[in-house]
Image (cartoon, rainbow, N blue to C red; front, side):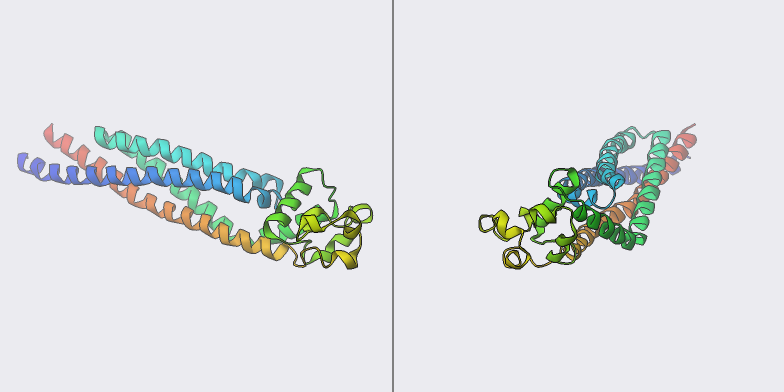
Length: 249
């Protein structure tokens, strides 16, 4: 019995070392998710707000998930150092829940990515049509046109269908150079055509979103499959510690 305990202790030590390293890496991934969530809110907030009103919660979900992972990463290190079987099982259960949640979120985002583009086309068309230069959606349209150097939906002529057009013409955010645009020129389609961006925003926005959503999806999938390693290590360590305690009795 003593020899078996001697054989078990190096295995427990090895598993503890691996799990502490894993928990530290897991904690780092939480920090990464937290950073991606903040970055997504600051960088993609404008575009997400034009997809659907309830989609603006997506960055907050990443921020919340990242914060939770940071906390449980520290818990994992504590549980490993303590060598508590029930704490390790709780840690493994949390990792399994995170794995399932991230897997479902990643698959859903991949499956419905084309629907997101269709929704964006509809909401962006409505935002341009109802543009007044004052509300939140109008500011979102201005941000998109300023940052991507585009005008309209498919092209600049889409502004002629906007309720803003009859009195104001093109918004200032369409201008190639703001200093070269005056209100009279912006109300004249022929003159303004030489002073505003010709390319529409829809193609640029969807390309921008797909590129950045790909980065977010890649990070989420990578972290999701990382949970499997942690679950295996936590369950094995819990089992070996329980077996070692039983043998000592």
